[in-house]
Length: 167
Image (cartoon, rainbow, N blue to C red; front, side, top):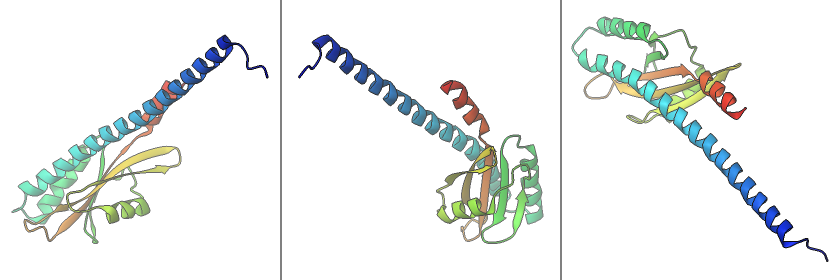
């Protein structure tokens, strides 16, 4: 039985190890980049939510309509982040309409939220992709009244970046 020369077998072994190493490196790069994008998105969304928290904490003695007006002004000034705020299980207070929050994805994310533990989620509308952050914020000092806060951004630019890199 002819096994081929030692040179041929070593070359084939080296090529197989090299291909396996490059494939592993490619998978690692893809996963690491995806995690990096998620963390950047989370930081952007959490920063927007911190502004909402600030308005709520600073306005604890203010009339609800004043707080609602301040939240509306905040939402109007956001350039890349859309925010939706509703009473927990109740009426909508304010919403930025530049991104339509899908009812099913928002509801599923809110079901997974625990107090002080936001949930990151994603959805698509046709070719457009979005990432959202859902959390509960206390309105009152005792934490009995909670707001459902959803913040979202478009993430199409992540996919465009990966398309360029993978070419």
